[in-house]
Image 1 (cartoon, rainbow, N blue to C red):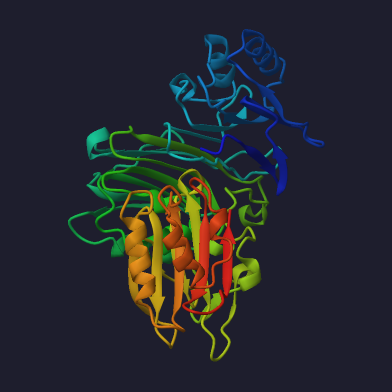
Image 2 (cartoon, one colour):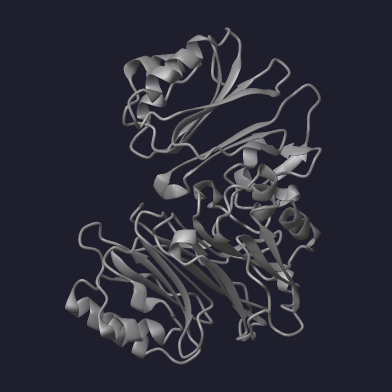
Length: 456
């Protein structure tokens, strides 16, 4: 994955300082700097244990793991015990192959959030909302296992497990902004996910939802399902595959507290979050440090459309992300992310998601003259043959046709000179900068200039 980490407090960014476990101790005053402990080294392990042991009970600590890219970060019994003293429940599962681990811990208490994912499943984010000295009103865990990895979904809240039959598909538990249990629901894969969308749409802003997939959740997954879950802060659903394990704890209209996903045969996932505010304070007024959901992933409420200058702005509301449509214009947004940075290719027209393909490589949307989608195609340029099909597709487009391209996963491996030239015939000027598992988006015109182009 990216081999890096960052920690955020009230929007301020603290970058990881090296490989291993990066710790940030949050005090009543200004937080300290991030310290890295590469626990593959015995002295670093001892230093981490000594640092945690010296903290007063109740101290809030942020932990982010940066694997070293070789043998991985090792974890001794002493390091595991130190993490457990911060409330970690999954420290014993961290292996040299672990790709990502994040913990919001409390010395001598329970973790506010904890996320661990297996190798090659991309980055993770953990977040929580509460005030200084506040007592959290909601302590929630969601577990998911696809058919081949346990075939189950379960929830626990403040030690209580809701009495609900778990079915194949999407399972959910809902709470109000004060943490009071509202209801639980299940959405069978043999039926429709429309009822899940309706349930999320009916939640008030600030409500908390925990979602977990059992067996299989991809077959009934629609653009409407994606849009509903994105209002809870979901960012990683572009990686959802057949019989994936997936769990989310999110706050309606604010962002995800924790989210995890694992491909089939890669094990189950578990997310944990702690949510609340001090007595007498409005939870919605508390600063929210989510996993940096940007406006580019937020579906606008019709007839609003995306603001062109807000796509990289952290936010998930109409006021931040959207604006009134201009007569005679079509709003177009493309989100692209390589495998280790989100693994998505989303296409929006006039503020609404029209396609979120799960195919690797270049994904394309051909537009009609009125701006409506005419044809959706995918070209796997990681394998041989995808580039030739991409060239043929572009050659058959009439001059003047507007066409959208978004890369998902990896697209550079077998991108030929002919396919690069074809994209340049649509106005691309930066396509030769595309690297391994890079992100790339183009709003192009066949035989003309590009309207927008981005590569990372």
